Length: 487
Image (tube, rainbow, N blue to C red; front, side):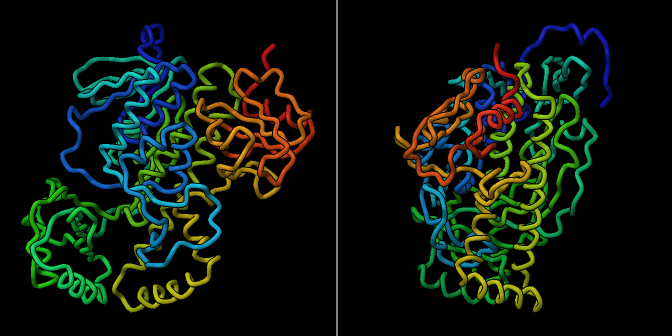
């Protein structure tokens, strides 16, 4: 992709930000930008929702972010809630005690439903979404980005964000490296009904899992079973799997197909693991699967992308409104790239623990024993659910750079104060001021707040940007994160 200085420089803008892809990441980003009156156009190449309905898991940090924007009740009404446990390498341990969150559970929800809820939220805030619009090419210059669609139409914006998935056209046009490991093993996954008694399935599944950790056939509720079977030698990778593919693999592994029928959805995934070298090239940024892919073990992928959007939205909005400090947009890559690298590593480790080789099986037995220690169990759970993240914001107390849980405050719950996507000064001294920043930061003076610090400055994504009680120090950090004060 080359910079150009054609008449495109002076072409009228179709949007401030064009987002390629209306999956969970693109829809969440559109809504976050609209909270700050950024003109957003989302381009989605598909004309119809996906035909298969995969159930995805929303982890604690994503649930917290939905609560911060007033979306949690709507999502929870469409989801199944279950305990937050058994994520790491499918080692079945109960949830550890002392998890510091008011939302200590998992929400299972069909992927099209969460995408639709987030898209509806973005549209209600004023985002425009165009289906059947595939990005074919991208050019950028000093003033903005020109996006060429597959039908030849050209659109113009100040910034472009590629949320267009693992095979991202935007990433390829940017020429950004996508290093890692190609897929070595394919797996079939689906939800279907069975034709034999549960006891027979449970006994056979337990027997197989002694030697084959990648096999699973377990009840999922509503009369459905979730099936996970190796896909070796089955069908064409480019085509969706069929019910006959599942029957064939079940017979090969279990000696019976358990009478499976009436599939709700069927899918195939590989274990490719890749990370974009850079999340930003000039006026073009990457988020979600366009920036990172990994096996679905631990259920982190969708969550990682939505959390990218939550980190990027307010920063890009500040850049567009001319308020961002010079380096603010660069903190998106600086903060989120290491998080993705850590997720890729923990999925690599989990995949090893599913191996049937003697060495990995011995390590799995050791992990299973170690996770009986609450601190180990909690550490792994906080890693998978992303509540253990601490952004590097410099020297300071351990809370600096971490997310603040949904604590009790005078008006009720902390996250209810963050619906508008603004910063918040939570002030237990009742002595500090946000004069000059009150157009973008809220102030709650509350000596009773359940907080082990005099005052904290929260960014719009709920992470702690400053801790202290000195006004001059606070002003420096308000400027660092929210730009110069208004005159």
